[in-house]
Image (cartoon, rainbow, N blue to C red; front, side, top):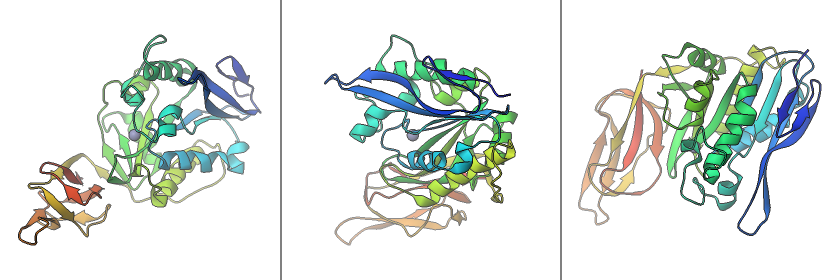
Length: 314
Ligand SMILES: [Zn+2]
């Protein structure tokens, strides 16, 4: 028999699916804002999986991943275990189309949070109090920053065996070794023994259907592996990248590249050109090392020092 899941005083019994709310807070206009949480709780015992997106309000691909997952019949009728799905955790930033909260704070630097802290700190506290203790593991969906496209990829801690094992089951196109960052959900949950995988794909404020599909497929592989659904997918030939580095603009100007994310480049390959607007200067941007392009800048006008191409090394 499965176990009841209680969020914010609402209990979802084994064999039930329900929508509950993580918390309710007020906008300055006193309009109430709720954070919807979708709970799918099977009768049979199994793992409880958190699928969360919208931590940054302008990162839309993850929201689409969760939307498509919770529409599925096999998710609505899990064979065992439970899913706690939060499509948009940072509602207020989503409404304003911004990455950060109205006070400028990054929600993913507010963990573990505090009951009487800032807005971000309160949302973090609610997640840590109501959700994290009930899960076995989770996936947190992100995208690249503004004007940066990330190739669909998972961020794992290579020297954490449980984290890496889940990453292998997800079977993304790429896994990047990504040590814990202070005050993130991933780090705060890990301190409670709950592994969180971070998925990155595409660019903020844009749909990238390749990334959306890879995000969904990885979740389905995890659910199938834990016998929660019947749907089975072939694995990707995952590339494991031990370290990554940005190639930065040596000069300011117009950046042209024909490179695409996911491509393999050799040391010395030309990644693009930085030109002045007057047809006089053209600087080549070369790969300092061999590796895979894990992220790429889409901004045509760049300043000296701007991050342009993110290369991962096996
Ligand atoms: Zn993000």
